[in-house]
Amino acid sequence: MTAQERPPKDSGEFAVPTWMHLLSGWIHRRPETWIRLGNLETRLVDDAIADIRVDRPVYVAGLARSGTTILLEQLAAHPAVASHRYIDYPPVLTPYWWNRWLSLVPQSQGAAKERAHKDGIVVTPQSPEAFEEMLWMVFFRDTHDPRQSSVLGREASHPAFERFYDEHLRKLLAVRGRQRYLAKGNYNLVRLGYLQRLYPQARFVLAIRDPVWHIASLIKQHRLFVAGERAEPRALEHMRRVGHYEFGLDRRPINCGDDAATARVVELWRDGHEVEGWARYWAEVYRHVADTLEADSRLNEACLVVRYETLCEQPRETLTQVFAHAELEIAPEALERGAAGLHAPTYYRPKFSDDELALIAEVTGPVAARFGYHARSGADAPADGATQPS
Image (cartoon, rainbow, N blue to C red; front, top):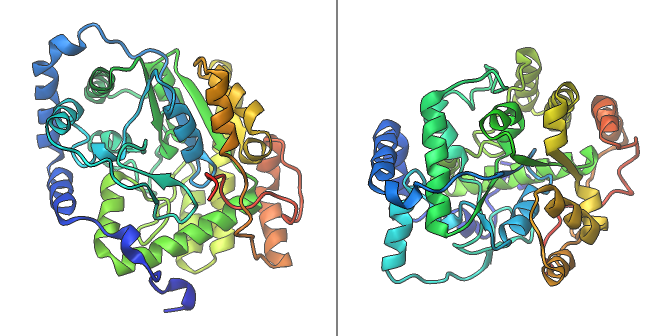
C-alpha cells in the first residue's frame, strides 16, 4: 500500500452507524418491497398530495467535483424549494412516513461537520443531498453498468417509474411545505431529454470545470475514498446503496453511449493510468453534453451551463444568473450572503508533469473549447473546491 493509499489518520468521516447499515442493506436488497411500500404510502396520503403538482423542477448536474454541491446548497436555501436531505436516508422511497415519524420523535440538530470529501463543505442532517439516484436505481437496475449505455433521451419510456417518481416528488413537496423541487444528480447529465419530456418546464443547471483542475480534484478524491473505504468497509456498501460510483473502490464511469470509449476508460483506470483515464472520461461526458444541447434547441434553452471558475471569480453575478434561470426570486440580502461564502481556496494545487498537462490538453482540449475554455498549462486556474470559508 502506497502512502497515497493508506487510510486517512481520521477515517471517522467514512464510518456508517450500525442501524443505518442494517436498515439501508434491507432496503437495498428488497427494492420491490420498497416500491410497494412507496405506492402504499401514496394511496394513504392521497388527500395530502391531491392538489400538488410538480412545478418547474430544478436539476443540478455535472461530473463530480464540478461545483454541483455548492450550487445545490445555494438553491436549496431558497424558502420555496424542497430537496432531499441527509436525514431522509435510508428510507428515501417513503418520504412522507419517514418525515412524519421524524417530526414526532426528539431530534438533535446534529453538529455541523466537514463532509468526508475534506473539501471544506460543512453539513448537518438538514443539509441537502443527492439521494434522488436511489429512485432511479430501483427501476433502472443496470443504470450504473458501464458495459451499456445509460443515456435516456426523449424517446425513453418507463410508465411505472414515471408514476412513482412524480408521486414521490409530490410527497416530498407536501411534507416539506414547499412549491418547487430541487435535485442534484450527476448522472442526470445523460437523462436531460427524458427529464424534459416528463417535465417540459424543468430548469437545468449544468456545472463544468477546467479539465486540469477538475481531473486533479477527481484523482485526489478517488485516493481519499479508496483509503476511507478500505479503513471502513461499510462505507463502500453505503456508496453503492446511495448510487455514488464516482470514485472509490467501486468506481464506475457513466456510459454516454459509446461502449468502446467507456471500456477504454475502465481499462486505463484498471491499469493505473489515472490521468489519461480521467481525461478521456471528462472529454466523453462533456462531449455528450455538448452534442445533446446542440442537437436539441428546446433542451438547450432550458439549460444553464455554469463554469466553476466563473462561480468562484464572479459569485454574485453568477448566482444572480442561476436563480434567474431557475425562475426563483432571491432577496438581495440572501444573494449577498450566498456570494460572500464562495471562493476558490488555495490549499491544493495540481502536481501534473509537463507530459501529463500536454496529455490532458490533447484529450480534453477540443471538448473544453466548446465550453469556452482555452488551452493553458493549468498554473493560472483556480484551486480545488469553492467552499465555505474556514
